[in-house]
Each structure stands twice: as structure tokens, then as C-alpha cells.
Image 1 (cartoon, rainbow, N blue to C red):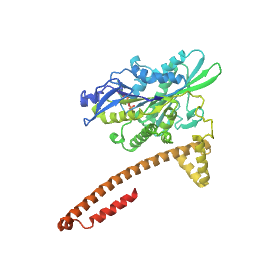
Image 2: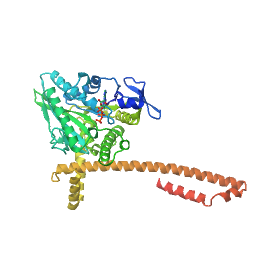
Image 3: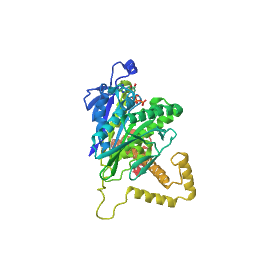
Image 4: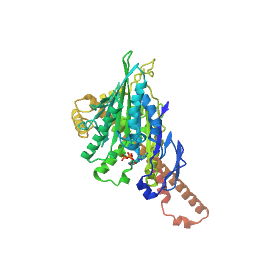
Length: 480
Ligand SMILES: Nc1ncnc2c1ncn2[C@@H]1O[C@H](COP(=O)(O)OP(=O)(O)OP(=O)(O)O)[C@@H](O)[C@H]1O
């Protein structure tokens, strides 16, 4: 069983950070896997990752450790994902793209151009028995809308799920590339389009998630079987907290949407991490476009790497700590990559097969259809169309998918409500215990004063205290 590869990367101090804090850094005792981190209150935390890249680490080292095994697997039809996470200015884009995709020092080239080269190199060395082809798509998620960066007219791509191909971006432009130069030129066009869209919409790249998708099709010539590996690279929007940005109006809305999708990613990671064995666990993939697109990658047939990008400066200690903690949570996800198109070995030979997830969903949707009257359905359609969940109400597939999205989001809300209630119950239990202690102490006091024949204490006690404590304890006990 493989797990996620999680690495931390600290960029060099910026000139502003040097001006503000000189050479001061939050990191100490760094080795290749661990370091200690001092926050602004001088509290010390020790972190341990699969690899720690410090200031002077080379781009090539990051690629070799984090990406090259995933690239090799993608050519063998195993899905892969590489994600850069961190606050704005922490080095996500530098790590992903380098200073430029097309013209750049060899030493500074980022993951993306190296992945392109790696894919073509692996294909070349895979021999003559295999025929491969690579298709490239590039999208951006901004305010929960998926925009095609190869065709800006497609500004609200829908996400679909197919039984054979998994998660799909409906109608997204796919460019066939036959050489690294062609692929890099296409990527560079997509990046330029992103800048055009940003100016048109007055958006900064740090407020959107950028997703690069390579589909590597593999044909085994002898029997013409075909398999595909999907390699997704994600440069996430800045993870900083809304409060720190001091944002208002549209910027505040953007920040909230980003925080929502990043916390959806965190929730998916938590659900995958905390899932108790044997118990059906709701993984909220449908709570954001980001998690939905990454569903195949995080959920199973895939290898995933997360690069947690941080500033080493004390001025960013809080954000760096939050990025590192996000990485530590992700560390616990366990995944077993398997080849696509493999036989399903889990099918039981004896007894009736238990319903699949699709069958269960179909049954629930059927029941809902029976219970809704036509007027409700019309209202729901209008609501879904207005909020961009649904585009074609006459498509049963789209209606089902929209309903599944809403159901999943409702489950998440209910789970949060249950957690809130559980914490209220805990609080009431604590209050209950304190009141019981108070009652016992008051009774002891009563007994002592009676034994001593001293009436002054009794006289000074506010009248009715015991009976009021008793009735509060009783009312709280009845909540349990
Ligand atoms: N490892 C590094 N070595 C040298 N310079 C770096 C490194 N990482 C980042 N930088 C520099 O730090 C600055 C911020 O980096 P970058 O733009 O990659 O941040 P980011 O996390 O992508 O921010 P945003 O969310 O705004 O896109 C850039 O000027 C970049 O060149």
C-alpha cells in the first residue's frame, strides 16, 4: 500500500522579509526529513515529512523526488497528481512553472517543463511494443467556475463522471502533443490566456486554482488494448486566511470561495484519513469543483504528491504553520495504486452481490422522484440553473449529478451540525459536573453548620440556593 508523498519547501527570504526581520527564520535543526519550527510566541514544533527542501534546494531535486516516480507511473496508466499548496508568495508557481515555461535557465526550470520532458523520455524508453499518445488540457477554477485556458469562451466547464473513464471535464479542449516543444508551447499559450482572463475579470492568479491535465493513452499494439493514465498538476490559490487579507467586497467573496474549496480539500483529506474501517464514510468530494476534479486522484487509483510551500520568515510564521499542519494531516492518507482496466477482484463469488454505490444512488434518486411533485421539481430546476449547478434540466444525467452534489453538500452540513451538537453536549456535561460538585459542597457546608449548631452560615446563605442548584442539575441531566 502506497501513501501520499508529502514534502515541505522553504523558499529563500524575500528582500521585504530581510528588511523587516533581517536574517531571522522560523526554522531550526533542518535535515532532509525533519526540522523544528518556532512560531511568533517562541513555541517550538517538530515536523517530519517525506522530504524537506530548504532554501538552497534545486528545482531538479524537487522534480526527482516528488514528480519523477509519478511521471513513470502515468506512462504505465496509473493516475497521478502533483499539488502545490501554500500562502500567496510562498513559491507555488515558482516550484510548478519556474520563472518561465519557455525561456529559462536549465537550473531554474519548474516541475511542469520537467514533467513534460519526463513523459516523453519515458514513452521513448518504453519500447516498440507500446504506442503512446499525450493529450493536454488546462483549466482554472475561479469562484467555483471551471474555465478552459485553451479556449476562454468555455468559461463554465461541467464536471461529469463516467464509469469507464472516471471524472471528466465535459467539452474541455484537449490538445494532442507529439513533442516536448509542442507541449511547452501549448502550456505557455494557456498561461498567457490565464493572464488575459485575469485582466478581463480583474483577478489575480493567486486567487484561482490552475490545473494542468496530461492524458497519456497507451495502446499495446499486439492486441490493441488501450489504457490511459491521467497526470494532474495543480497550482492552488493562496491559502492565507481571510482575516489577514483585510479584504472587502469582491475580494472578500473570492477569499471566502478559496477558503471554502481549500477547506473542502482539507475535509476530503480528513475523511480519507479518519475513515473507520468497515463503516461507510462520507468523503465530501462533491463539496467543491477542486475536490471533484481530484476525486479519482485522491480517492484511489492514483499516486499523489503534495508540496507544502512556505516562507521561512517570522512575519509569515502563522501561515507557514497552517500550511505545514495541512501537510501533516495529508500524510495519513493511504492509497493503493492499481492499473486501470484491471479485473475487479473484489466481486464475491457466493451470495447475492451487495448493491454498488451507483445502484444505491439510483434507488435513492428514484424514491425522491416519486416524492417530489412537478411544481417542486420545476422550482428546484430553476434554483439549480440560477446557481449554475445545472445547465440542461432536460438531461437526466445532469439532474442526477446536481442532486448528488446537493445531497453530498447536505450530508457535510449535517455532519458539521452533529459535530457542533456533540461539542454542546460536552460543554453541558462539564457544566453538569461543576454544578454537582457545587451542590455536594453546599450540602457539606449545611451539614457542618447544623452539627456545630451555627445558624449564622445558614442565615448568610442566599435562600433557595440548594433547590435552584438541584433543579439545574436535574434539567441538565435530562439532556444527557
Ligand atoms: N525556491 C525559490 N528560489 C528562489 N526564488 C523563489 C523560490 N520560490 C519562490 N521564489 C520567488 O518568490 C516569489 C513568490 O513566489 P511565487 O510567485 O512562486 O509564489 P506563489 O506561492 O505562487 O504565489 P501566488 O499564490 O501569488 O501565485 C517569486 O518572486 C519567486 O521567484
